Length: 97
Image (cartoon, rainbow, N blue to C red; front, side, top):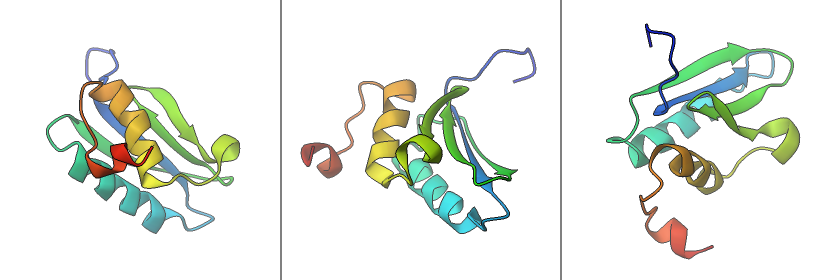
């Protein structure tokens, strides 16, 4: 955003270019955009290095591969949902908890 504030509905996926994780990041981005098409204002893919794979929502880390391993889409959807659309149901994936 241009005024220096953080857009709470912006998601960023930072991925390692050295590890060639772009396809994984793009697939996860597609999953998030499909699930939160009305709630998100932006989803960015950010190239990085050093084995990074981090998902941020509203500027806060909601998933870090170094701490949690590679995410299942449902786990990331829950983490993003809790930030950008707390009342939203995730349908059948929510019931399998």
